[in-house]
Length: 444
Image (cartoon, rainbow, N blue to C red; front, side, top):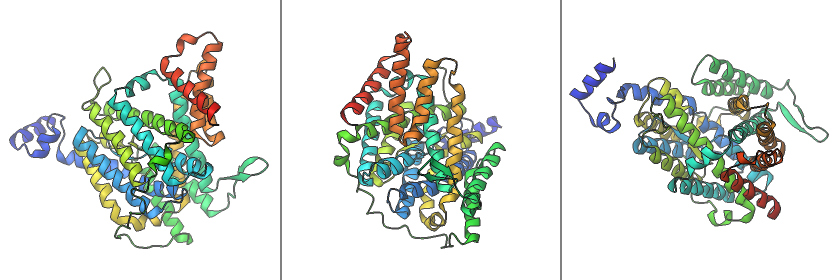
């Protein structure tokens, strides 16, 4: 079949064929279009989940819906046209919860200043890319800490999902307690999670979207939501775009937050780019993929743009592997995905119909995926196990991703130094640990 595609491309080399080199990668416009639609269906849940999370930070959910669609659309199209990779971008899960519930909610910082912190974190990521330090940091941060960071964010997200569904509630004596399991909102939240888990285990790519649709439909039947139509002219977004407080975010108190945004986005986006291109067969034996530096510039620039227009950190989405699985190999896949996100801007009434418990299952499911990496920790080596454990559990227990990362790096240095394995500590770890230690001493 690939020979037929190549022959057809040579006979009629349209501009899409030439620009994206479809024949070279053994694909076609039809295959890339199907792959783009598949990727869109697997990650479109973000346009429903992100507004609800950022709404907790007192942001207008209708506007956030539009800006989420906008940055996902423009970012994905930029990745497709500039880097020519089948990788879609959108606001990152985890960092949106950290921004809304910790930076704004617990710390009492305005969302405008919080977005400023996200912006400076993205600027830092862009500079690391420009100076070619980005991969040096990824290569030199120990595996146990990378696993701990990923898993800790997963636990943090799952905690938010359990809270939003009402499965767990606050308790002044025991800190947390089980909620009212007979409540229909709790039941629907749990049902939504199991719909996702069961469908995903059967390799159904749009599991999250299906669960949101079903639970929202049941919420409509219970009277929790009301049908408001499908199509609508997008609301004015002037009250969000450009409202970011860039100067106010440059505060000593927020340095740890800025560094956390940068570090997490560093691992998240870079790791996803590596994973997707590897699955697509685009990575060489040296771990490099086509247009690598362009891809890194696009994702860091997208994060800066995302913060400016009022969304949390933007990252490459691992759901892009769904499009790769059905044949997507070039940037045309990402362009199709981005175009569909832009069309979603006119469907804002659908987002307003989604109740909180309908997206709770998605949060818990993301937590399951992110904590699965704990199996890779060398638990029989306490100098590796303790830092991974401290990093992971301190994020939900302190309700702060920043504190989890800080205590993880510091505990790694303590364990290695006190057991005589100081040679395992490299310059990158020392620098990060010292920066966090200084933050604790001078700021906290």
